[in-house]
Image (cartoon, rainbow, N blue to C red):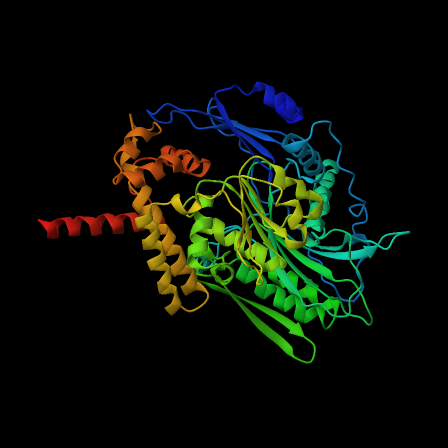
Length: 576
């Protein structure tokens, strides 16, 4: 498209004064929203994609379709020796990152331009996507068996796209170490030159997230393995998840750690943590043991929620092992571990963080451990369900990209504590310390976080959270916590469907925003909702509703709304 070649500066000139803009650095997208009248929304925002920015406007009609998101499958290669095939070593992604271009203007605009320039050199742009071969439907007697399998497996999904090994290599004529991809499985062959270039930019970005500390490493004799995750956001807004485990490679003497990273479109942290346990166990035996296991995993179908898939894997001296991988029944919570969040913060402190997030403010989390950062930031985003965080989302900010904290727009960021000094000189944000030795978790705050949510509803959330003391860890804990915050949205905005008006059959609905919040009682709740409906997460939620045809809605949120409405009817009947 022609717009791809335009520059962000030209884009800013096109925006009129009566628009609201937000910059999301996880995909560096620039969104534009026309301030609609109280009568409701009339059109869905269209999208125009840029190489490093994206503008979306209500004046556009329908979003562009970037095509199928499935990526091409790699060749089925199995390691039979401990040596890595030379053809699989990526040598041209280990170049030093170019210096961030200097700009004349200082402050936030300067940081914005520096970050944009840096990220555009690492971002993966649009590309022609190659579909995986589709499985054909069996006929005859096999049909019945296949019907059962459809309930057990998520159709058309692989566990992962590829596995990469990121090693720290000592730079020439220097004592510094640079992260380099030394192995990729499966290898991507047959790509066009432009596709290969963009793929290598993505792989180069992955090295930053696997070793966000930068180049200041030293050989180690002991290193406790750690698991964390990050998110890669495409220009079209779709996301891929990076699961990473860092460990000390086999050998003698001091040596730098290495990272195993799995890239997948699937969000299931617990499942991939178990996969890494198996990877690490095989790594202790031999590098050659990892790749047969990963090949078996790649060939296995991804299970549907609540189901299990079994992987057979041979280990010398142990024989053939069967590894069972089970997905949680509540699939929308499978990337979440609320235990870490509540280990770091009290219930009241979590409530303050939630209040800031629900109004889409700038929030930075500080910790030493990468696993703590990634788990907490994903947990906070999950508290917003059924709404989705639409802005910058970087669970672990690489040191080279620390200027993102100067962005004037909403974000959820995870920053290592050694970079704290580069964060605390900012204002109008919430900086949350997750360290064990913290005195006060809120290093920087605006000060009004405690008054954002209606006091009665705050008390109800805290009461619901108190029930988790009797809950076991894992899925039961996730259920209790998510239920507490889900009920908050049920009680504040659960009546939205009654204010989506439909015209003739086939026409999209129109949300009557003014009548919606005017109907809310008491006044303090109405005051909160009036602010909340201005957020982008609510805006996009309503846009999706407007696109749907009238009728019963599906999903956990709608189920809870119906249960709450039925409860209110019974209470009203008892009074009379």
